[in-house]
Length: 458
Ligand code: HEC
Ligand SMILES: [Cu+2]
View 1 (tube, rainbow, N blue to C red):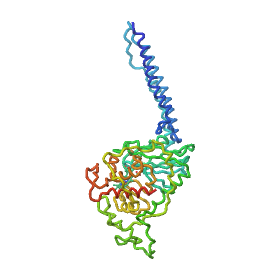
View 2 (cartoon, protein in one colour; view 1 turned 180 degrees about the horizontal axis):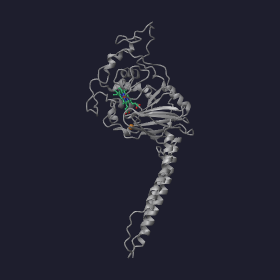
View 3 (cartoon, protein in one colour; view 1 turned 90 degrees about the vertical axis):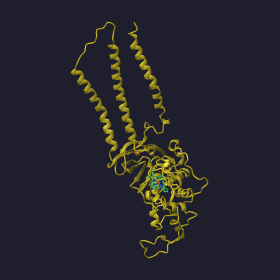
View 4 (tube, helix red, strand yellow; view 1 turned 135 degrees about the vertical axis):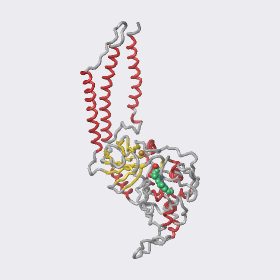
């Protein structure tokens, strides 16, 4: 009679199956260091709190699992059908059992709920006033970071000092997003008309390092392309970074556009000057009016041809990058391929001085702010004041180099699905509207010049 041996074989098979599944899981857990975005290697007290909570819940869950499965296996074996046995008696209702299986899960839930809610309250409280304050604004599909204590507004790259508590105020300009840096903290939502808070302290034992962040709440076409980088640096380097970022954009004097001679110092400057004239009357300001066509080159700027007083000359850029380039890990460097068919005329050399002038009368200024360039005060897109000091563009999607920057300006909508930034390159087709950019579109040379200008904004 084969009956009695069958359950035993089944149990053995089940146990063997579980072991086979468990081995790769355990191995994966041991190898956590080779997963640089893993949340299981926390580097802040927030991360540790979540990790401890996870471990506790896993342990409690394991106890419950072993108990329930043990009972199940025991019952299956003990009450299996035996040859010749009478059919089991049917019962209905058992008050003791029903109370037990209501009370036990309730007790288990208390064990889970108390530490969970405690951790939530702890991590969402507003940090002390001396903490570094960072206002995070989610946009479709990029991140804006403001440091009100320093007067800094930047995008997609967050600098944090090692060992200083940082308090994030999380808000959104449009739909729901979620802020998450797996190894530091987050996964907290950005909700319309509501501010969420989050705080953590990057471990004081940490060395200069870069971490990847992502959006974790589906927010539309480019949700997966809404990334950011976090650079954790020593406090002195952070201070240097913040001071520099708060200063207006300054770029080295261009060979094409020499600095204007000092103004003749009129006693009273008229509030509005006739179109085409500049504060200093310098000849180099003339091209500001010349390249205006329409469309991409803003009609608004053409109408108001007062030459903006652009800060030029000198250099406030810190020596080299505040975050050392060689401290980037491979996973910090984007490898997104550029779209097929989007190309750029080879061999063009951009001129920053010329680029500044073209930029200052292009559509760009309606969407972007460059502190130090008074015509550029738009707030639809990222603040570009020090865009040259960033490692990536387009919310961490591409490296910030000449090739990618040029292609981005030429056809941003081809480079990233759904973006608000218009397709601006001459003869490019806007993938959102299917319309070809003609009059007013930027030529490759103009784009190369603008890119050179932006790169000079260190
Ligand atoms: C209609 C508004 C709009 C116009 C016009 C516009 N941009 Fe943008 N720009 C955006 C938005 C929005 C983004 C963010 C896109 C994203 O990453 O999802 C952006 C991103 C960028 C970035 C990347 C910044 C970063 O840190 O990731 C650069 C550089 C840039 N724009 C340059 C330009 C230049 C140069 C022009 C003019 C030739 C221009 N933009 C015109 C809206 C605009
Ligand atoms: Cu998002």
